[in-house]
Length: 357
Image 1: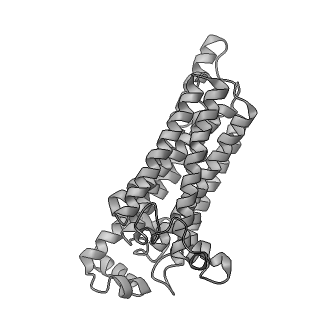
Image 2: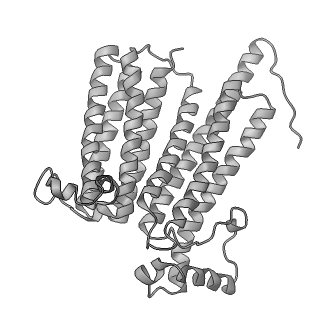
């Protein structure tokens, strides 16, 4: 099939055709956001099952095909045996166990490839058919570039765990998750901007704080990645106290030298900062809901802010449960998935307030 530029008709049919094409682009963007959400969850499962280092090579094209023969499987297993994680974490693993962790990582990478195809092919079609406004074209090219960068950063993260350590570097894991979260946020923003909902005029301060709140949620997601990377959720499993204190001793929080290392490598500090920022984000969400009520009264904007505060409170509760239970797989995955839901709602809220058509 050959696609050609299809100019819009004139008059009422033009409006209908434009609306239909806008709706199609919005569905595509929401679908991409859903795929990125799924990839984040699968990535979390990959990390929690120690599967991320099972594929020791990066083959962007041929890697889409898993081993098909017994010899191929054995070769992959032998490659895995060469890295420190095998002897330190899985010294008794057999080929069956290796296949289990291999398929987690393979599925994660396959989703990345599918997202790439689901981005490029519709983008080309919509572009050729004239369904995209010039400003949206530039933004979508930015999304495409961000997705490509995410793939490179993913391999850069994996490489950190192939020698000299038994897991990926937690700071690289945080960057990897933050890029995925930024990609998700960008897609949700663009999809939301194409909706036809009624938009109440909001004060500038409310629009500004809604955007700052999105950044606060992203920061908290990054801090959560540091906790996951260090397995810090399996330590200090009491709440609201840590080792019997609300605020741990300063000498323990600053145990490592130089000082900045504590914010990345000190289990106590990493978990403590994640807790404190969670409280701040919850307070921020409640204050934002109250401000929306005072400024706008009943309506969609107030409902969004209230829903966002409820989601943040639910996420905080899930986080506490995950901590107290010492981060079982199901709870940790729920916590990560809900973080993306909070981010998505925060972006929808900020976008709706920023667009004053």
